[in-house]
Length: 467
Image (cartoon, rainbow, N blue to C red):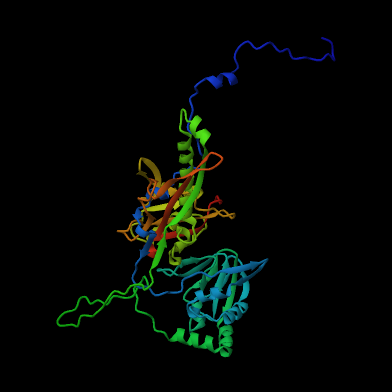
């Protein structure tokens, strides 16, 4: 063949049946429809579920006096940060103060300051004449250790405040040194600014005077109203009288709902049910998606989700950013009888890296035939519903579970009409004019934290740092 001649493909006539045509007549071996969204859903499996009749669950507790340990919310406009005026009511001296105009003026008097890592905000022993509102960053509370060395007493993060006692106590001093662990953006409100405004606003002056004059309520270390007892006495000592006071307005949890309408064409349901039932497979995948959403809500819902309902006193910050064995020990020490950790898989990997760096090898425990990592005998379950932020930080949850243990419980109502699983129903809704069959798929659920120390969260855990 000379150069330039075209090469033409020679096609021979088809001599046998093609595979595409053959599949139309063959009975192939098929799998059921697969779904990548399905996860292990350990939270749903490990929570003890409480039957809730009437759709509402009331958590009765002993009377607890508010101690003002909330968080402060800020608004950021470019590099400018300001505090939401009503959020100043989180400070104990300003709690229940309702003059919005005065709070707005106090918010305007807050001075924004930037601190570099290692810079000291307040020094132990010096006069405390201002309150610090931490808009962004991490601050370490440093004090003297038992042997005179320096010790980190605690770590504060976004939304925290300290020094609030200076607003009502002119002789207050700092009991620790506050030092920036990272770059920090802080709003500072001085006692002088507050007193200056109080001289012009009688309502603020009276409120601060009342806040300073109110004696401390007799409480136990958990903030609950004290029960008077006598022990170790001899002779005819007078035995104290007491009673157990309850919260007048206990919290009630209403069952939440997740729903969808599944539609299946009647022609599909009639003609394409072999070798597997199309309606059953559609329903199976829909229920799986509904359960995934249920677990997501139990973690992230603003009303009853675990992350949002953790008491601020039970929220910890990692001392070095990455999740370390020390941080996990601190999280465990905040409660008795911890049953489980929940962490994003990337957080578990970060914890494993830190253990390997220290030459530690976490144990594993067997749960339901599965071997899962554990720390101090408490299993660490993966949960991809815990969010990872753009800055590659996440949270690790630790909890005690069960009503008998005053822990965290899941809420459901079994026995509902057309139920196919506990608290999950599928109702036939009819066939429309286009011959489409509709089913209403519904799941009812919620979660309750019976006492604050049943749930703890290690926040702002870094999962993208290798060192």
